[in-house]
Structures are given as structure tokens and as C-alpha cells.
Image 1 (cartoon, rainbow, N blue to C red):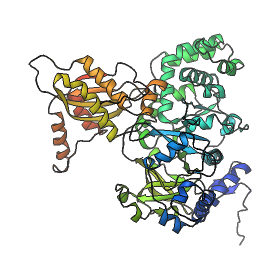
Image 2 (image 1 turned 90 degrees about the vertical axis):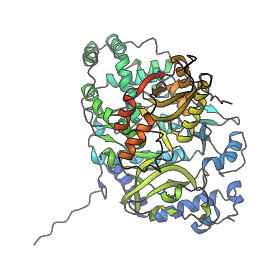
Image 3 (image 1 turned 30 degrees about the horizontal axis):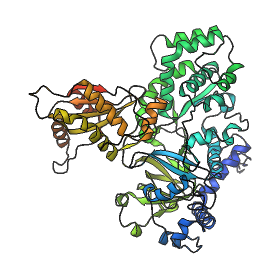
Image 4 (image 1 turned 90 degrees about the horizontal axis):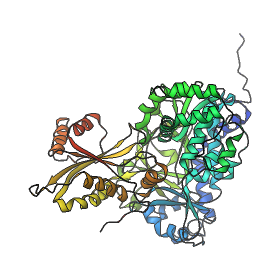
Length: 603
């Protein structure tokens, strides 16, 4: 009897049949790295410790040139950003000696605020751009396994840069994506038929968010029949783009009809970038008017871009709150979460990018950094770090939750990232993780992250304004409201006014000032999103009637909470609790102005 044999083609891989030989090479690289995850990790740690052996930081802990795991684990402590702040400040102030890294620090990548409410400055080195580029290069080969034909059209991706500053020592400080978009890796990228985007590079690099968005949306409309996927980095960014279309479709249609660009676009390089493609097209202009003038926005993405196969957006973690809205605007298109990264390090990718958002798991690529994992039951305790046994990448257990701890080529050693991950399985010998949450984050609309301590501080700062009225905030909670675009923070306050007889109760104007005072006490990432980007709306305080929080406790106890252990939740998302709170609102107030970009310090 003849036995059929399958002859492997040059493009066959264990992940599936690659679209082409170039893809096959990348997919085999993923397989190789993950098959030998532990050996790769050992090599990565040895490389990091060897090259940074003479740094001040490693010398302090007397490693003596050792590059093995046992010595490293015995001598190097686990740290947080606050622990490293003195060293980071010295680098920011211009100290060029090898403090954390033997390679020169090329810039700082900024991320959400510290406990003092300011941006974290993460030192990085030039070669990290190559490492990030390598991870990016793996995304398309994986996507091609699931969605064929992406080389036959274009991607409408809304990409933006944010403002950058310089430290006292002259180093740039900017978000990681701004750094990437401004790098030659992005600006001088070779033509790739699988990654043709509709947005001209000058529009992406334009710091004016209105001009950038306007031209990116315009180009998306001009290429509407060629668009095969629509996306932004975060779900909130894509919703901002839809909101922009709702507000500016008439102007966009006018420009398309006339074949000339709005005078509001003053950046010459941006104007030049569309000069060749913007020709009078009355038919397209009429189509845009017909689709947008009805006020019916359900399914708008597939109505305007009918060949769209999926949305490319991050909808894990805090971004999951936007899934229903995206489903509404897209008519239920799949949402692909492709990679997992932060300012500190790029970690890994989703090998099943077309899975449901609730099933997203990321495979950590063991060549990116040295990864360790702090079991969640130990993560709450800051003391006794020396006795805590961190778990290696290849030795985590399925079903358990861990806090991610990294050692990077840029010089971070055993650094607690603050991400909580749950192990869902393995690809070869490399674990796959579901992103559970950021540690201690209560509120998040976009790239902002507000924790409990910061919210408490903001409430205290604002409540100072109530003192002349003999009023105090007796209880409060919060909610990130994302049903409108942009989303905004809602803070529920229950007030106690001790003496109403004088007629001096805090009125609407006072409450509005309280809203602004809260905003000015929040971190710089929040304030930047409010002021520079407009990606967060004015903060709202909803005053609830007396006794509301007792009702909240009664409700929680009726659902099985212990009366002895009940604590008022500082953030609420559960619909019945939100309904209870909203049914007790006696007045609502919004911040009347933009907060200052520099934080206000009370007292």
C-alpha cells in the first residue's frame, strides 16, 4: 500500500504555511527562540552582565564579573523606579559615566507617572531600536498566516507623535512610539507591500495633533477602496479618529471636492505630502457627505472602508472598556492585538492575533531581555525581597499570576515593571501570558494611569476649596467614562455641609474649581492628554445625596461582602453600582478650563 508523504515546502513552518520565504525565515526564528527559551535567557543574561560588568551599578553589588544566574540572583536586589531615581536623575543631569549601562544612554523614554505624579524617565541605548524593530518585523509574518492578501491593499493607521523635552543634561525625553516614528528605522523603512500605510510620514511626524489627524483622515478617505485594515496603537486612538470624522466631515468633503487642502493645515511638509494625491473628486466628496450627514454612525468603518478585514488596536487591559464602542462603529469586525510592549522593554507578540480580545495571550520572546516573575501572592510585600525567589521564564506555572521583573540591555536590573500577567500556556518552551492589569491603576482613558494614592491626593487637594463653606468630602469613588469621545474621569462625591444656616453652601462655580484643582493635582501624562492632545475630556464631579455610600455598602453586603472587611471601592465599573450612584446624583460639574501643564502643589 502506498504511503502518502508530505514534502515540506521552503515556506512550511510549525506555525503554519508562510506567505513567502521571507516570512518563513521570521516564523522559524520565533520557533527557534521559543524552543530554546531557557538557553536563550541564560545567554541574554550573560551578555547583559558581561557588557555592563564595569558599570557603577553592578560594581556596587560586587558581582566580580560573574555572569551566571545563581550569582546574579544572590547579589542583585529587585527594584522599583523610585529605587533607581537617584541614578536616573544623575544621567538626566548630564553625568555620562557608565552608571547603569556601559553603552551611552541615547535618550529617555517617558512613561506614566511616578508616585509624585511626574513622568518616569526610562534610560535607553541606541541598539534597543534594532531590538524593537526586530519584534515589529515578526508581526506581519504571523498576521499573514491568518489574513491572506494584505499585500493587495493598504492600512489606514492613525499614528501620532507627542511632545518631547530635553533633560538638564541635554538628553531627549519622549514616549517610546515618538522615538520610533522619528527614527530612521521608521522614516527610511524599505518598501514592503504588506505594510503600505495611507498616512504620509510628514503627517505622522507633525506635532500639531489637529493637522496630523486631519491629513491622516483625508488620506484614509482618498484611499478608501484600497484600505484592508484600520487601526491605531490603542483603541482610544481609533475612537478619537472616528470622533474627528464626526466633527470635521464637512470640511474634509469640501477639500476632496475642490482638490485643495484646508488653510488650517499650515505645516508645509504636511501640505506637500498630499499635493500629488489630492485631486478634485466630487463623487467621493458626495459619498462622504451622504454617509456622514445622516447622524447614523453604526458600522461607519465598514461603510466608508468596505474592504476592511480587521481592526488593528490594543484592546487588552484598560483598553477593554472600548470594545463595545469599537464593535458599534465597525459592525463587529475582529480586533487584532498584535504585540506587548512598554517604555522599559518590548516583550513579545500574539501568535493568534485574530482571537477574541478576551482570549489574547502574548508569547514572550526570550531574546528581548532577561525575564523573571514575582508570584502575585508575594508581589504585595515590598519587604524581604532578598528572601523572595523569582521564577525564571521557562519555569512559570500555567494558571498562576505573576508580576513581571526585567533585566535589560539598557541597564535596568531586576526592575519591577508593574504589569500583572497570568500564564495561559506555552508555545514550545516559552510561556504565553494574558495581560491582567497594571498594578495599582484605578483610572485610565488613554495612556494615562491614575492610581489610588494619586486619586486620594487629588481629592484632598480639591476639597481644600470647600473649607470656607464648612463642607467636607465624606466619601468618594470614581469611574473612567468612555461612552463619549474623548472619555473623561467621573468622581462621585458625597459632601457633608456642617452649617447651611448661613446660606454658604458650595455652589456650581466652587465645584467647577474643585474639578480643575483635581486635574491640576493629577500626573503630567493626564495633563498632557488634556492639554496637548485633547484625548481626555474635562474631569466631572457628580455630587450624590447624603447616605449614598451607605446604600453602596448595603448593596455590597447583600451580594455577600463581609461587613467587617468592606472598603469603599475607589473605582467602580459594575453597571448596577453605577446605576445606583447615578440615580442619587444631585448636581454635576465639569472642569471649566485646561489644567496647567506643570503640577500644582498645595500646602
